[in-house]
Amino acid sequence: QSALTQPASVSGSPGQSITISCTGTSSDVGGYNYVSWYQQHPGTAPKLMIYAVTTRPSGVSYRFSGSKSGNTASLTISGLQAEDEADYYCSSYTRGSNLIFGGGTKVTVL
Amino acid sequence: QVQLVQSGAEVKKPGASVKISCKASGYTFTNYAVHWVRLAPGQTLEWMGWINPDNDNTNYSPKFQGRVTFTRDTSASTAYMELSSLRSEDTAVYFCARGFELSTSCHPWGQGTLVTVSS
Image (tube, rainbow over all chains, first blue to last red; front, side, top):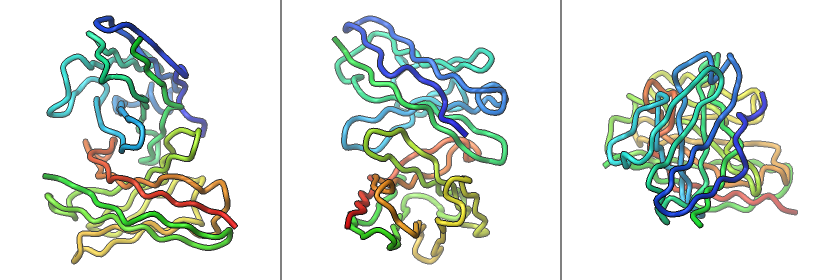
């Protein structure tokens, strides 16, 4: 099964909002409300930012929000800050209790 | 707090096997699945599968089926991942992570274990 499709890179200036897309199929993103988003800074472990499409775990900034339409999920970062510069990965639950990740998006704060 | 601590870096020759440990603390080990995910250089996160520490059930990604084995020691709150027939493409950082939200996501993650496969 191929990875979910994400843009390779997205950039924005401090204070701006950016959106990262994550496109799958009806067998994963479109078929379940179990899309997650992870943030990974270089040399560290991924950190869960959004789960179940729209829910933020305790301690995650309100500036991060998730949504989904059809086979495409999105992560929006509002009020972009320097500390948001990192790699972001989406994942989705798939049939058979499996998970699948996206190709990853490098976010650059200009 | 919930924490997963993994074993240290490994260097292996092609054809060998590697076994990584993941010690859980701060929660009841048998109440949550443990996922294994790897990140190879220049690649994306790759899900390998999960183990249910309560009943020892496992679910392997088709890509790794037959080459990976998940085990656990409930008395030590520790999960293990063994990957056999190593090749250079298996050089990666391997992470364990606790299943979250009915195991549809991963949270939190271990610190990662670098496995280098080189002759």
